[in-house]
Length: 294
Image 1 (cartoon, rainbow, N blue to C red):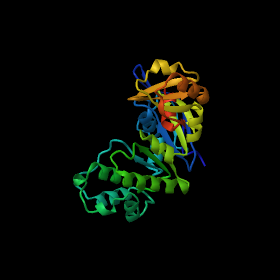
Image 2: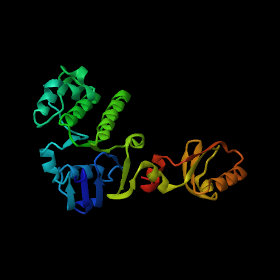
Image 3: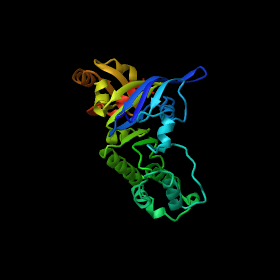
Image 4: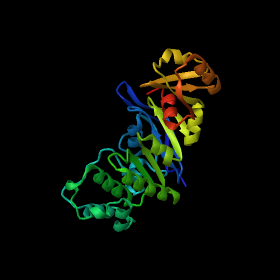
């Protein structure tokens, strides 16, 4: 079977600005892939090219071996975008049923609405829904065609805790059945909790690609959290092993390649050091380090 998604040397220019710069991405079936990066890194541009909504300036994109637009026509892809309009004057069940009618083999409407947690909204009109409720409706519309690939751009924006949990439970259930999900998010904990693989973008390029734990290992450092009366970045940065200092209120976070040496020097040189703890690198720290602090 062809790969669920394959981007080869994809670049996208807007005048002199380069949104993507030679991006390669291969997604096999059954994976959940998080696309991460700071604002302007190219995440939405990448997903738009994968969906055929934008043409690449150079390079190629394929979904299950088809051009992206053809894959959409075949009903192979379900999409939830950051900004997508909904018909205001129709009921939720009417909209989901009408969308199901566009596919050759849709999921049962009732099943889809339960999976997206909109079954209790069935007879309400879209115009009366809150932002989070609308997002759940968009998720239902992405699911109802029973797509082999789900593409989700910031899927949990506006959702409460229960809504987020329900969405990821459904995504996980689908990937366990061999389907594929690719999502962009600013919630790094979601990538840590639900992604099999992380693709990290910065300035239009892939700077890291692999399982979450491998991304953390790329940084490899430890972190020391310490409370100080007057934390000074320059003085702390001069301690042995320290690569980076982040001052936060009355404390600091030191990223170090040699935590033992850093701790010995910290206690020897800073009598007011207290509440000291060490930790391995988390995904947020790896993100900051690999994207150059953005």
